[in-house]
Structures are given as structure tokens and as C-alpha cells.
Length: 188
Image (cartoon, rainbow, N blue to C red; front, side, top):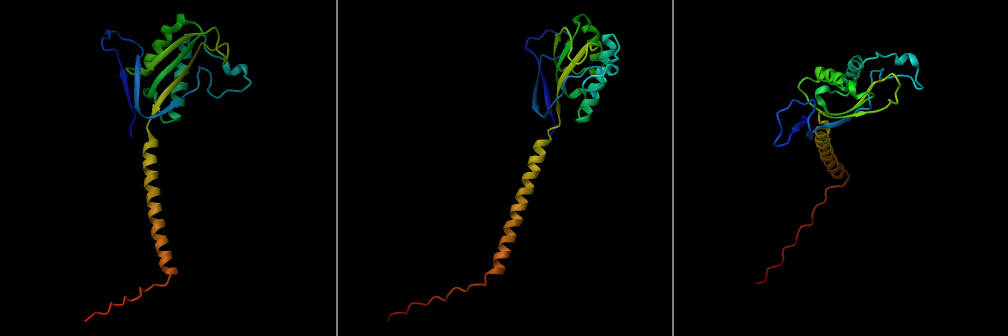
């Protein structure tokens, strides 16, 4: 069954172009939760090694690297940026939000997930990171199809077991003949 995600707007909404949807209603689909991503490589050493965090100093470049990390991580789960329904964005300088929004819009096009943007003093990943984004996406609803399919398989297996059981019983037991019923004698 395919996913079903619908934007929700206020009935009296103003006609203003916004970089996000006020709400998205997910009717069908499987939810995918991504850990926070930065411009740094997704797979980096722990404890951190400085050379892995040699990042561009500007928000626009870091946002571009982050979006590539985001696309790669979504693709690993069979999703795309169009499947993102919610994003929490952490910035070390809210004055650079317009640069982030420009990169965000260039990658998402007309798609508008819900967003929350928060300014923080520093990101825990590394001091060179200017932005971290955590997202929730909706993938295809494979559970319904697999549950339905596995239900059919179980029913077929039970049916085969019942048939086998009947065959086994019929081989073990000799056929029993019912004793002939004596007809009651007729009275004359």
C-alpha cells in the first residue's frame, strides 16, 4: 500500500509563500527517524578526529554538504527528500537562517515539510559545525502487504496440515464398518 501524506492548512490561511507546511497528516506509510546530520561525514571517528571536521566556514556551503548527507541517508532507507515530513534544524547563528533556507528550498523544490528551527550556542558534534538537522520521513507501507501475505501463507500452511492429518489418520486406522442394524421384527 502506498504512503499517503497530506498538507494541513488553516481554513483562513493567508496566501503567503512559506518554507514549511503548518502540518502534515500521515494516513499511510512507514515512519523513518533520522539522527541529526551535519556537514561532517555521517560516519566519523569516535572519539572525534579533527581532520574529519575540516568544514567550510559559511552556512551556505555547510548546508549543501548536509543536504547531500541527508539525501544519502534517506536513499539508504528507500526514501527521498520528498518523503521528509518533519525537520528540526539547529543553527549556531540564526542570522544565517536565510542562507540555510535558500539551500533547503533548492533541494526540496515545492515540497514543504514541517520544520522547527532552533538557535543553539554550539553543536555537540563539533565546534566547526554550524547546523544540524534531524528529520522524520514516510516510506512505503510495506508492513500491511507483508502482514497480508504472511496471513495467506499461514492459512495455506494450516490447510495443508489439516489435509495431511486426515491422510495420516486414514492410513493408521483400519476402516471400521458400522454394524448392520437389526431391523426390528414386525408384529403381526
